[in-house]
Amino acid sequence: MRARPLERWAPVLLAFAVVILWQVLVQGFAIPEFLFPSPWEIARNMAQFSGPLLSAAWGTFWVTMVGFALAIVVGVLLGFLIGSSRLCYAALYPLMVGFNAVPKAAIVPILVVWFGIGSGPGILTAFLISFFPIMVNIATGLATLEPELEDVLRVLGARRFDVLMKVGLPRSMPYFYGSLKVAITLAFVGTVLAEMTAGDAGIGNLIQTAGSQQRMSLAFAGLVTISAMAMAMYELFSALEKHTTGWAHRGSGAH
View 1 (tube, one colour):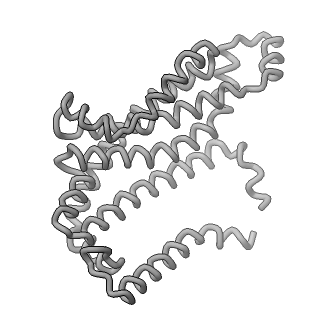
View 2 (cartoon, rainbow, N blue to C red):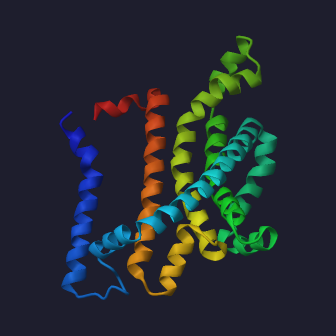
View 3 (cartoon, rainbow, N blue to C red):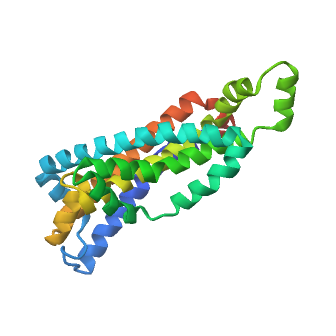
């Protein structure tokens, strides 16, 4: 019980220590701002350009959420299909692995040709880069259902669909939430990547513009903003996981 407050504040304490060390090193070695800005300069730029940063952050956020929502829908459907059928697993899984291996940076220029400059490439890149972890985890949760349990349920009169819906899907929920926490960070990466390549707004466009002008403090302020959004969504999914799948983490309180 005594360790819980320390565990809760450990990320904050570590981040504070890293920031202090960062500031000391930059000042101690007199590193120029245009090469590697100090936390103080980054914070000053965040305050000075709070309006443009918030506007860019909102643009990146809604594009990411649209792409992420599509990734959840497609990932869950494909994961259910692959995990519930050996034939679909054998046919689709290798193709999905091959598709996921394609660098998404190479796809962005193609998306620009198809959909033009704007939010379209960002939404699709966020979707393409984040649906795979969701699909894999749902498929894994269903495919690893114990054969003995399935046999018992079949003897009791349950159909294959009943077993998947009433046992397989609930059992897959910890896998699902684990995949969401990974996929949401990837979705932000995909959006920023598209914005830096083909965007006319958003954090990625802001970072690209600031970097081309050698305004590293503003560019780092954009990086901090995108990191804060990703961490906030991660914590949201962690809270949902604890409230909806507490049965899967019942041993965590013993530490």
